[in-house]
Structures are given as C-alpha cells and as structure tokens.
Amino acid sequence: MLQTKNLLIMENLSSPKPSLDKDHFKLAGLCSVSYCKSVIWKDILSFRSSVFILMLILSLLAGTTNAQQLDDYSFKGTFDPIANEVRNEVQFNGYTNYWHNDFKEWIRYGNLFKMSLPNVRKTIAQSKIDLADDLQIPGLSVQEGFVSGLFSSDYKILEAPSVKELEESVGSGNVLVFTDPGSDAGKKLISKFVPDSLSKQQLKSYQFGAVNFREVNAFILENGAKKVFVVESTVPEALSKVRVLLENTRRILAEFDLRKGMFGAETLLKSVTCGQGHPLEVIGKGMNEGNSWFVFSGYMDFWMKDELGEKGKSACGCRRRVFTHLWMPGLQGYSGAGYGYQTIVDRFCP
Image (cartoon, rainbow, N blue to C red):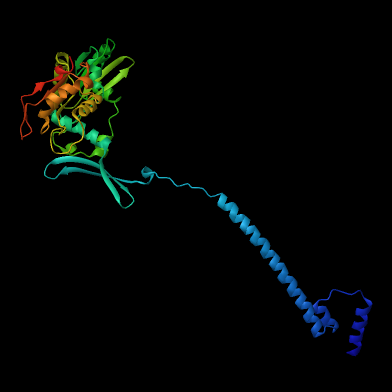
C-alpha cells in the first residue's frame, strides 16, 4: 500500500501539473481540506458572477423588447351594429280573430336592444296575393310590367289557340293569349315560364289552402321587340275575369288622367296637440313621392286655409303640371269626415 502511494506521488511530480480538480486531488491524496474549500469557494463566486451578468443582460434585453412591443400596439376597435346584430324571422299565417299573414324580423343587439320590423320582401309579395283576393281572382299572379307593356302598343287577342294559330299570329306583332296549361299551345308556353318560388315555399300564406284557390299566371315571353302576353289557368272563369279586368283598365286609362295624391293629410297646425310638419312641408314631401293633389282633413286644419293660400305663392309658384289640386275642408266633423271641401290651388298657382 505504501509503495503504491509513493509511486503515484512520483508520477505526479514527474508529469506536467494538471488542472486542480477535486477528483484528481482525492486520487493523489494531496487535497487538504482548506485548499479544497478555497477552490470550491472560487468556483462558487465565479458561477454567481456569471449568473449575475446573464441576468443583467436578460433584463436589459427584456426592457428593450417591451419598449418595442408597446410601439407596435394600435387601436383597432370599430362600431358596426349590423355586423353584430342577431336577426330572427317570425311569421304567422292563419286565424286569430281574423285571417291574416304576418311577416316580421326581430333584431337584437346585445341584451338591451330589440326591435321588430316587417319583412319587406315577404310583405310586398303577400300584398299581391291580397290584391288578387280583392279582385276576386284568388291565385292571380301578374308579372311586373305586364299591363304597361301590353297597353304600350297594339296587340291581337287569342283564346285557346292551337300551336299553328299561335305561331302564325306572333309573326305579325304582339299577342295576348288566354290558354289552358293542359293544351298543346299552353304546354309550349308554360315550358318557358319560370314561376316565383318565393310564394309557396316561403310565404305559406293561408290563401294557398283555400278551396277556391287556383293559380292564374300572367307573364311575358319576349323575342326582341316582339312579345307574347300569356294568361294561363285551368279555370275558364278566371281567364274570363282577367280579360274583362284588362279591358276595363284600358278603357279607364284612355278616358281619365290618373294622378297620385294624398287624401286625409293632417298637420295639426292650428291644434293644441303637438304635431310635426307645416302643411307646406307635408305638400313638399308628398310632391317628392309623385303626389299631385292633397286633401287636408286634420282636426283643426280648416282654420289654416287663408294662411296657406298666402304662403303657398312662394312654395308652389306656377307648377300646375305637378301640383294640380288642393282641397281644404270648410268644416271638420268629429267622425273624421270633412264637409264643404273647396279648391284653393288657383289662389296661388295661377
């Protein structure tokens, strides 16, 4: 044992001095307690200084990084109620204390705002179905522009024609055809017709379930300037009603000059009740909508006829072509009826 120790000492003294690590000193048996503590303490101090320098560098980098991120911030807030609204369609088709069809849109925004509006598309489509009932032709559907296009030029009327007769007639000009969709000519005409899918699939109107409901379609087929005006139905009586209705409409339009107007307009100008709109303002808004005559029947509006006659000189001027008649009641009844109407437009529109 002693010889081995001496041999190791001699080897250590003759070789170059190695790095002083703890394991080497233990192996050589030369590591004193005080010397090892000194070496370990130096290592600890070196490690702490390295950690401190590293933390200092990281803190500096972190401060620089935070400053750069703050510069990159920007305001991107927007207020777009339409994008965040919630819409629900609500409709009723049936009977409560009367038959009616109701189409609404419920609009919600957050939890504090809610409103109900008519569904414009469905309400307009339903109004046409209601008009067909008023005309006593349930199921009548008329393409927009049918009547004005028909009356804009001469046309030939064909009732239940054959295919040959129809083809011979279309070459000479416009044709108005009344036909059954089950006939040969009717099948050929109907094959080119695209019905409105909105009516039955989405409206679900109560009229569609009525026992007397029969589809009566009036539509136009075009080939350049030539047009075929088609009225088709499986009910001959409905075809006859449509023909009579078209003839009466053309006769009235030829005899009378129809003008749009406002009947029963109210301003409450002379009433203690608050109401918006001066009479001239009501007239101006009405003229913007194409109205050419006005009948005022407000609760106390008959008191303003003299005042309106003087102020109307600057408001109306000489525009008789668009503003033709103005009636004022001489006496306003509590039932809403007006008595003693008189035209005062001539007083300021000579």
